[in-house]
Length: 182
Ligand code: GLN
Image (cartoon, rainbow, N blue to C red):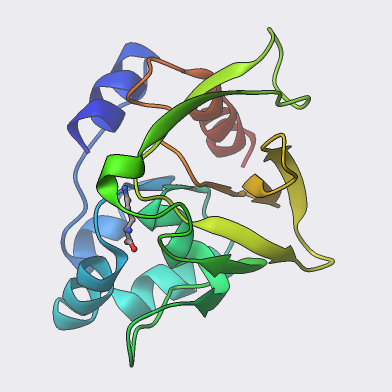
């Protein structure tokens, strides 16, 4: 979260942390960071955040989800723990931990035609993969083997990897453009 906040701050955005439902009303966009989707799910329900976030997504609030954040944005999950829920919004099926364990983390150079300025350096840390993309969502990037790792749907942006770790700012700029366009 700290890396996202620093990056957005550097891009001129006013950043605040959203932990309670009341705080959600005060922001124009939301970043759901990496971490552990099972924990994000449990805590969001415990703190009464699930319904407000689902409502905000339905109302078109721009959301950038990275890694566990992508899992939270997916309409359908594979390899979730029993009872695990997502906020949904992206018409995709996402498989958790698709790249294996923490030690199998890797960085890759990704072509992202929708972004100006050449390929993206992406860090994958126990990341999910997008297994299928429904008609409402579109693919922004795939690995060389064809696995989809970045998707977009209206004002939602979901990434399997962590652009904030490699100093990649263009996804955050795209997110902020969506916020400003609303
Ligand atoms: N494996 C984690 C999950 O299922 C995601 C990992 C990450 O966000 N770096 O939530």
